[in-house]
Image 1 (tube, rainbow, N blue to C red):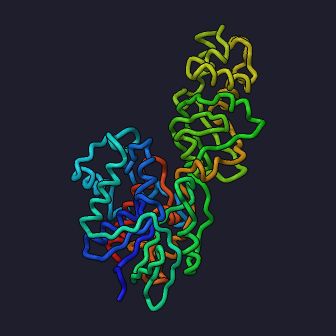
Image 2 (spheres, helix red, strand yellow; image 1 turned 135 degrees about the vertical axis):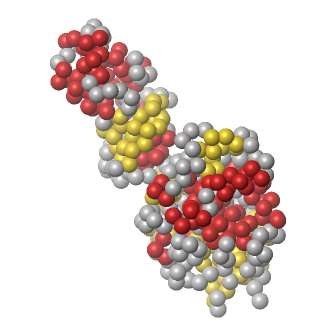
Image 3 (tube, rainbow, N blue to C red; image 1 turned 180 degrees about the horizontal axis):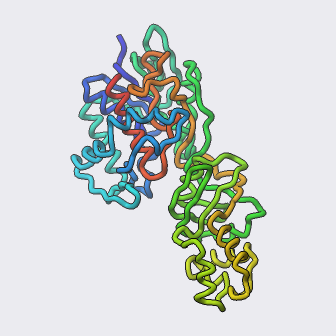
Length: 390
């Protein structure tokens, strides 16, 4: 007879949710993590206040090889469901922008809430114990922790992805999936800052300058803040489009999303002695206005500029092209895109279709949400889907 009904590997957001759900259904659950405490990424998220969900969650705000895969789990465990849990525990929270919900206090309250719910379900914990061996035979999964073997008919891969390796991130879930014959979609850093090459070094001199823009990569467009860094481009708008960006392609930025068509010619008529730089400085920061003007190379008063020249400048400011030479990689990526292929999983239960008893949830799966609480909601929803089945 096996020790447990289910072993959950990974005590992050998805693993905690799967464990507490199964435990409260009367299942004997062992929750394992190589880290010495649970929820380490929860604790650092949202500047330490945990952006725990987004009220605008819908399946079209997730990237996956199968764009419909997340729909079932997200429909069955919604932001309202998690908010109800948060409210039940008396955790004060607020909406920041664009549907993003944060704790008023520390993210630790979310971890303590989830751990409390695990204890209600009598979940057993094994923290600070890496898996030294993993075997499967006769429908039973066996893992070895600190020389002791534990077994269960169900094994849940909830060890996350490759983002933020200094937090202990590894490729364990993908390696294990491959071992059991599950396909893995090519992984890459997502929600990550861009780096710029020497030919765009002028913009690196703007480190610390931010502006509200519309950033575009392919068909994806996001209107949020962009931030110039000493290495390139960051801020919410850039992190969002990074998930859609393909290497060696351009991204485009509208620096003046509120400007009406023909605004520069109107500016010329209203202030003929103004320069392009001064016109830009009325709408953008002085440093950014100067950098854009230097690139456009228009130094004359607007009255001395042809309308065609101003229309051309306006068009370029509305679709400014950057050619990133890369990103800052997994070290700065908030999440990993790609992962265990959804083709191998049931969208209802998260169980591997050809490997009975093996489940994959959370970031390890090829489902990547937008910035702003979407990835936590996927963790809660996928964890709940598996926890209701194991």
